Amino acid sequence: MPKGKKTVIKEIKLLENNEILINGREYVILETTEDIQTAKTMKVSSNGNRILRFDDESKKARIDLKRSIDIYKITFKDGRRAKQFSKSKDKKLILPIDGNEIVSTANSFIEARSYVSKFQDKKSKTYDKKVGVSVFYLFEE
Image 1 (spheres, rainbow, N blue to C red):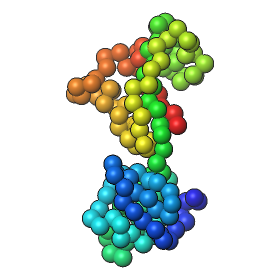
Image 2 (image 1 turned 30 degrees about the vertical axis):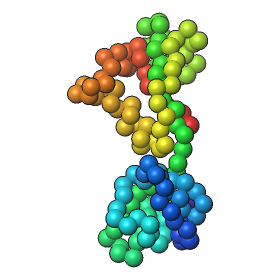
Image 3 (image 1 turned 45 degrees about the vertical axis):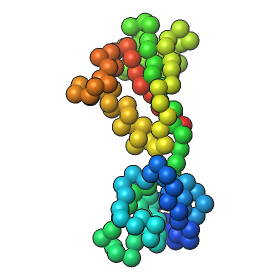
Image 4 (image 1 turned 60 degrees about the vertical axis):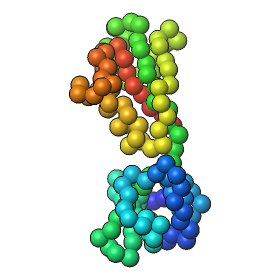
């Protein structure tokens, strides 16, 4: 959908787990509001967010396309390659001998970034001391 384009909502249905069905497509609710099913139009903002508009113009809600984004934990065995990867983010440096596991799956990029930030936040219970040194978290659709 091009940025700035408004779409008239013909069908809207609230699903479970912060998901909503609008005109036959599934979306993830990022910021909700009361009576979200009463939205009249959907607009794509300049930064790519989808914003639901209502009769009451002060009322808004943000949504994003529902995606399946895998979050990988990469553990480098070689410190030299880890340091190169830290600078270049070149996925060719990841070899089969390195640890590569899916730690979670997210429904939107915002949710994926939030999940990864928990491993980087020193105040978090899930803080990983090796993050950015020998451990990296990547996500892809």
